[in-house]
Image (tube, rainbow, N blue to C red):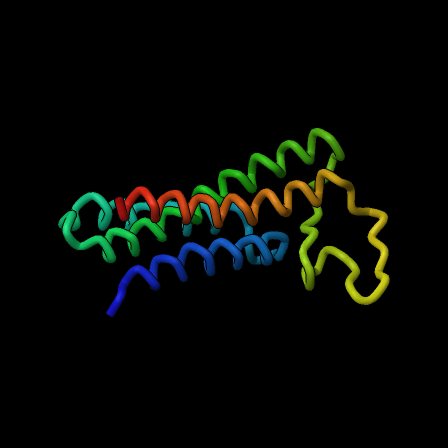
Length: 138
């Protein structure tokens, strides 16, 4: 079985889950920090102590390190948005709870910086995973 699929699934799945549920009351930053640090510890342990010839396993463990990179940038973007707009940024993604969706839906409360932060976080998740996988597989 190819274990790298588990790492890719963990990196994308956990990061997107945290992104979509970040404003829920049960998803407080302390829980997310502890979860991401736990995944990072597990990923670093496997990444550093696994045999170099087992590349698929190294890829799997790298996937556990991606959510903390996403979460750090999420906190940075939140701080920037609080300085600019005095509020957390609005997640501008289809079917998120923070915007109106549907045909012709208007979102006058969404600023251009909200769109930038939303797309930036999506790109950070994917780019971190792609760069890490390319470095590991060389």
